[in-house]
Length: 326
Image 1 (cartoon, helix red, strand yellow):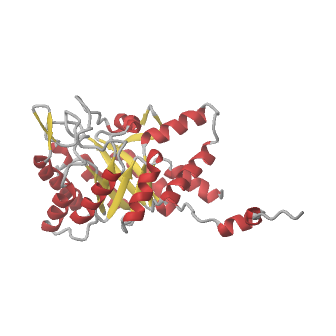
Image 2 (cartoon, one colour):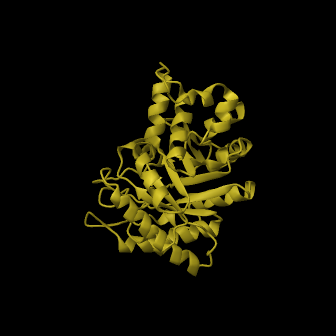
Image 3 (cartoon, helix red, strand yellow):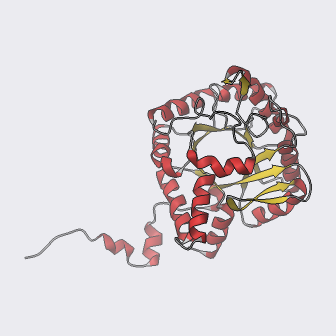
């Protein structure tokens, strides 16, 4: 008796065939590498919870940029650690703030490198929240003016893309209006449109020294249980002028990446966040996993879900692995 069945293995017989029919590929141009810049000199301070990730003073930044460019990475996103913090996050929008100085330095060193500025207040406020605080409450509308000032200052310094991460209602329209009024109509906004109140951010808060000093961020970042809300958030940002939509975190939110990709036709970015990075690094250090194989599989999964762009602390490693060949 003849048994009939499908022979799917025909297209898996050898590397050449597998390469020919592969549906999704990682490319280094898909990657954005995060950088933490700090005031001071001679500082290259490793983040204890993020191996091979450093806080860098500007005199150490040039060498890092040389390596990034050599590896073929074409975009970085900057997070700043100021000397002084205050309730209004003044250093975030000061023309000589740490991020603004880093932007100018990078653009002078390598003009073609895309410099993305994270636009938020949490690294610069003494309370660690992403907006103005009054009597223990994070105020939405007064925060918008400061966020717009920050974006304008970053654009003035030479940022190629503004990436607001604060999750205040109306932040995209406030920033778009501010940029346009200041003459920066050509600067795109990569909105942290769908940003969850996630337990995966812990190592980042060490790196950026941005942990909230009271309470949490659940009144402005999203509940991890919600998916329909993600589409409402993304739709609002599109109406307000966003050019790229980001989902953050990525690994536990692949379904959200897919929904945003399916429902909207803007480019979609996924942030492979610090906790995801640190878990893999720790497991690899203990010999429990093959780091390269796991990272490439994870990032390919993000691409498969619909991410056009991936922000990842693994970008330099991925660049080396792709040059070697998988």
